[in-house]
Length: 362
Image 1: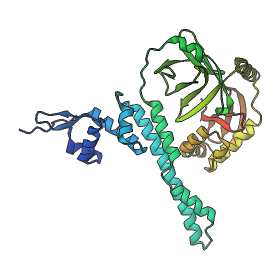
Image 2 (image 1 turned 90 degrees about the vertical axis):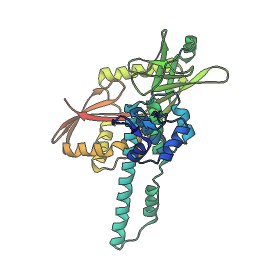
Image 3 (image 1 turned 90 degrees about the horizontal axis):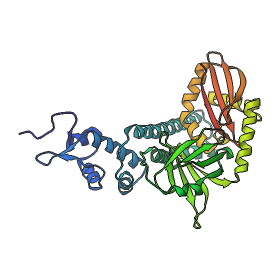
Image 4 (image 1 turned 180 degrees about the vertical axis):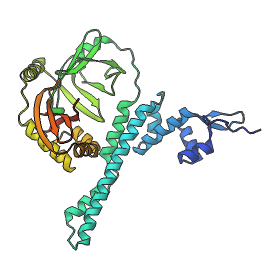
């Protein structure tokens, strides 16, 4: 009697390996590491169902980031697969790979054109070519891995809420424009950037907390003497460290923000800077050095999307300051030949652009 599965919901080891592009031996190795646990038929044939295939996707995605099988096994232990978040992580990694490939092809084309025209190839050309051909881009892979880690499912655990007193206070980020972050407690623990609404965070350990509705986490750093003088905010594939400050400084920053919002006071030179940003993106040549590192990473991923939107919108005709957003971002109405958009820009104390967005106007 044929023991093979008779539905599309279950695959034999041979069928699973063939469809995914693996060897049966690889499936056995993954099973030995506890990464998958296929069911068995009456004759002990291994059968792979949807959950196994989803887990294999997760394993292969993490393996592509350079993680060892033992590290993957430890990471995924007792954690269910979250397919939607896995897809988001894979999408980000593939987009980064696609961008590197396009950039590399453009560099090769430029060097080929020089050679065909009989021009000398400079050292700068050759070093740029070598850099672009180095596809093992550690920074991109690190970001993709961190995004995965930040998006994985999390479980709330009980902790002594007396600890919350040691976490409450005001903090200031060294990056992200130097903005302030307030942690408060009222039976529960809450966080908020200055000027924004409070969001409750939930413990997954005594020092690690997470937001349930967003892939955002906060880790409090406890010193040897038990004090907490800093925290790390995890979001968007990046980690931002903030240090405890006098709450009066956060209150002053909030008062200044409220004044800017009430009186519609833009940041110095924000219009000039935004015009330059729009022109650079339209040319396909964003100045990443003028952005904070996390924003630069995001801008690289979305460069083609932004340029396409601007090309469709047509030439910029006017830029009008509308006001200051909740988080301190300067909001502008941008009128283009074919479309109207809303643009927002924020500049940190270091002079780098810390936030940037655009969307079609209603």
